[in-house]
Length: 456
Image 1 (cartoon, rainbow, N blue to C red):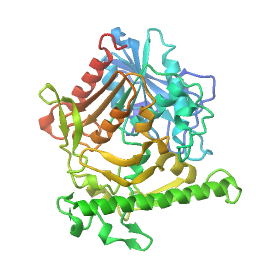
Image 2 (cartoon, rainbow, N blue to C red):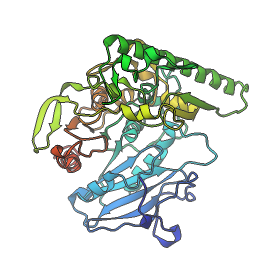
Image 3 (tube, rainbow, N blue to C red):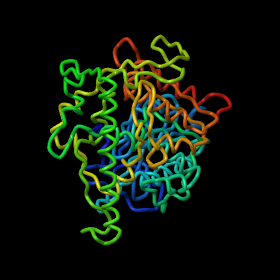
Image 4 (cartoon, helix red, strand yellow):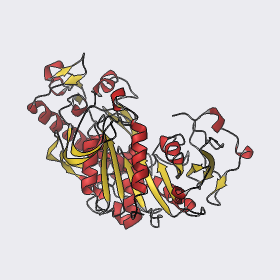
């Protein structure tokens, strides 16, 4: 999302707040730092400098009422977060919010998941200096939700939360030993970290083209090009996941081999190497059978709280109402920036790599055969180390409400809530007009959850 032109003002012309004595952050090429104020009838904003690696846009209600004792920190990796809906939605309800960006250095290798954590910690620390702030929570949407689970785990358990012999690539832990511990977490539509990338790898791609027997877009395998829907046979799905696992295992072994070469001085570089992954989407796009065959990941295993369009709240098995998402990946199969990732060896191992077992599969209500503890970018494994109050939110008009049930089930928290908004898309908009004002329903619930007597 782009910032309004009014946001991009020169630093010398606006009153930025400094959260550290460091020099101003250096943005990556092409990424301006939005620092100017925004004023509405309900809230105003200002830029907060958060050390060398990031900054935040602080939203404050014009009238500080009882809810202003709560402050929320939001982050998302590799994104401009300053116009995220959380800012205006929660500030207009009376809460304080700090939306943070990570800038990093032009000279540094690609950021690893742990690199984002110190900036979040500084943001929490800054908010706790504000008069009247009593509780600070971290909120994350999509990839920010996965990042939130990592932050929650490390802030509670220290670097050991992302280290250990079971990890393919443990975190180094150098700058994350004393993170500020939040008072709670809010996780919105979170993918499953490394698994999300692995599960989007095109199993049909070979060194010599595409294998038609494994092509999820081949009509002979059950895909309908006109409707972008599929009805795959159990045999095809089983073969596809087996091939996907095999291809990903080869990529992981290659990355480990190249890391060993780097560490032994046998590479052209002494810190990292470039690595290209063919057939993997750079973001949410990917060759995932469940994006075409809507019978897969179609309902939760257990009943959960569902917010209905008529304002009612029911406890029930959530059923998917999502459309097919397969068309975008199909259209981009031969596009370099759609189904190909240029990354680095260390970034691949820390962010994408995890182990799967021979029975790996995505079923109608579960994901099986995954070693969640093999990656530190793994929300289910991170959730097992989180004891804070946690709110998990997802929508029925997207495929992540089954993965988010897995995160919820792994949480060690005694105070945990999983709520599903009927008809909500990934961005908490309405799937169709019949679902009403989904955005309002979503953030009204966040408001209610935060202010429940006795929770905080």
